[in-house]
Amino acid sequence: STRVRSSAASDVYKRQIGKWTDNSGNEYKLKKDGKLVIKSSSGETKGTYCVAENTDGTLRLNLVISGGTLEYVYTLSDDGSTVELCSPGTDTVHKWTKA
Image (tube, rainbow, N blue to C red; front, side, top):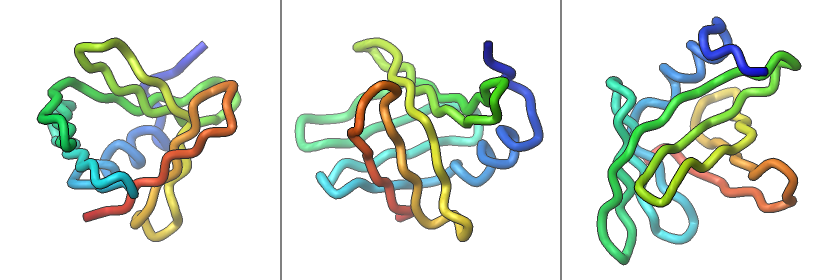
């Protein structure tokens, strides 16, 4: 099960707000109100996001866009400058850098 309101998730939520980029040239803008804008070479996608904490303490970032919900296991660097997102059940890691 997932607890959405925890101090860890709340802290990460605050630190996640802002503009991020990945190594594919995509830009992710996470706004204070939970809205999300993804800019890529193919255009702009809008949606929402939230940070949740599983009962085992694992943080997850959920992005809800027109194509569906994307869920990632979430690891924020200590200085808050990078984040690693891993799709559950895969070895694929997406790295975002604070813009």
